[in-house]
Length: 332
Image 1 (cartoon, rainbow, N blue to C red):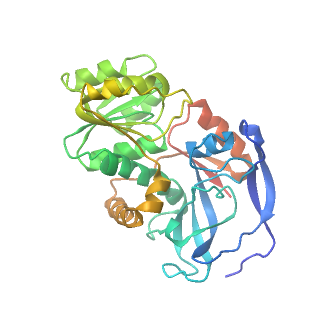
Image 2: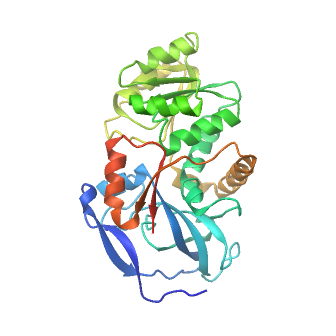
Image 3: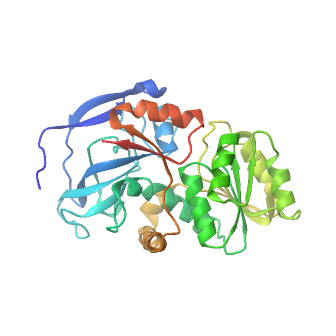
């Protein structure tokens, strides 16, 4: 395979700030070190973690100046010394919590490049790797949700939200989907979601209590923050679990332990990168499980928008508008 020794197209956040700090640049093609692989990217997933990285407020990612991006898909082009799980030509989904995927090429440790089935396109893979692993571990590992449980999902029309809804359906959980606009409500109707609400005009806690005959939700996966987070806390059933997997509104999250104590409820926060570091076997097994479910056809990424790599700023503006539905992709 031909590997360039010169420069590649990329997008750099030159400083902390708004979308306009994302500037198209040329950068050196990275070289894999020991136990790393070099991947030629063919599709790139945009995540809210990228927005937080650009703003320099993500607790687990370095801030600008940086090439952002934590998700993509492509082909392994070369391997560093010691790599045993990949070879040149392998199709992979990439998770890179250090950033770097807003580019044509990226280097990651070999266990952060996950094998893809032939049936999964690069676009699907770029919309699958980060969000479906996050959805899996929010529901199963932290939420411990099982068949029949009531599960509340906020920001349910986004990439992560739709992944959560699909997994709930597959695992026979009873999902309540919350969104912030009437257009997103229409999307949920088209998806066949049974229980949904617009929490910009309805009370989330009241809706959940009514749907569950006053009991509340067994598991809540919350990604908005602010008043939605507060309403989610009120929606928990006794012994329920609230999993925070994001804070898309950027609004402050206030957690009073006494509100949990009154229901003997649990609060958990999910950072996928911690699982990659400390539980690599769990990541591998969950990836195998997800691909098996994918092969049944019951889960498929919902791709809402495609932007050229050079217009990453436009993708971020759309994400921050909170009007997007489905996954946003960049095309290198």
